[in-house]
Length: 315
Ligand SMILES: [Zn+2]
Ligand SMILES: [Zn+2]
Image 1 (cartoon, rainbow, N blue to C red):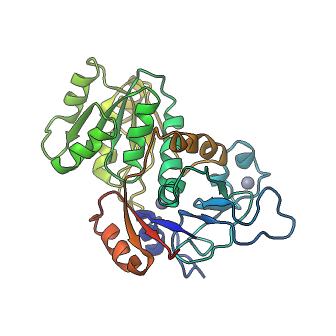
Image 2: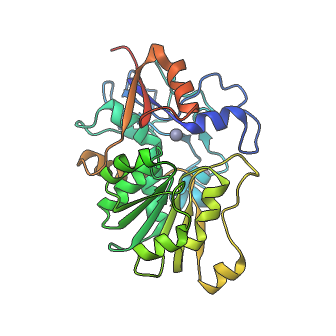
Image 3: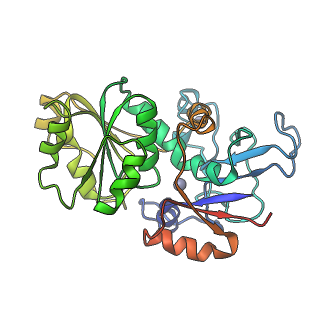
């Protein structure tokens, strides 16, 4: 390993927040790593010692079931996730399924690649799930977060008009720099649907992507959509604390679609990483030496980091 992102999902997984028990037998968290191949297992093809490789959250899947064949390997019943079923990336060496490791472009740094394995791929998958045409309006709720700031950048790169929504005026400058056309601070704006309508020709957004993990964020989303609008649920609050949906009267009269995604497929990552390679998107990161991992973890837990926290290992 050369670098590893520190993600809120590590806390949720460790605490058993998603309604299943904390990870049995897992002693090392971390699910977004980047490094070089130190050794290649028997029968492995396509990898050589010294190759740059990324470790995404999905360690392996069966590659045979209907979900795997539909490029939705993360939904495979036999999937194994880093830090949930397998020891993760907060260590110097990681064993990883060769078929699920991600080849990294030469010009992408390990510090950029590591968090991208989770937040970049997930943001790309969320945009794909929204299925919006260039010129459409997208609202990103939780726009300053690890996945959120990538949603804003991918949205801009795909030709969407992005309206960013988050908590606090301090997040405006960074979010606008990511390419959002407007930033709405929910602590100041009393009429969020009215504000979004005023920015979208009076009809509301074509899509809303919720990357914030709170009940309030999910509650706010459906009324921001125009007829035929799509809500994509990404942020994962603790089980039982939020609902992704709305009154059937709102959903039916407006023909809304509500769908969820859990990370990206391998095919998504192959496309997503070309945006990173070409410089169209960039992770905003705060780098910590590996010896400061406890500090990085507590800062992420308290939402104190400036951008995505990334630990780097000794050279
Ligand atoms: Zn993550
Ligand atoms: Zn499968």
